[in-house]
Amino acid sequence: MVNEIAQAHNATVAQILLTWVIAHPGVMAIPKAGSTEHVKQNAAALEIALSANELALLDNAWPAPKGKTALDMV
Image 1 (cartoon, rainbow, N blue to C red):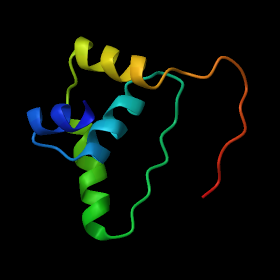
Image 2: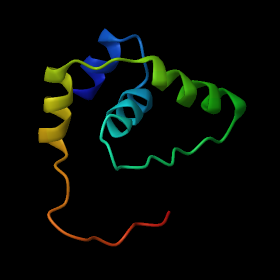
Image 3: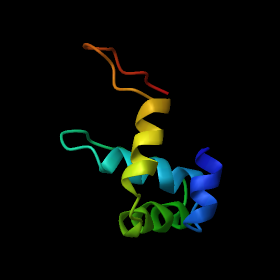
């Protein structure tokens, strides 16, 4: 599903997921960037506009936690 959304927007999966996270008020995204190209790709995610249907599909696939959860540190 994420691959199809990415293809529809001519974007990477990472860009779509970053756009989705940014769309949620009160949620902070901390994207990884291992190269200058990754920084540019992350910044380009700000230009992607997901539809309400696409946001709902992603919300249903990855629902918000019901309570406090520990952060995974990788």
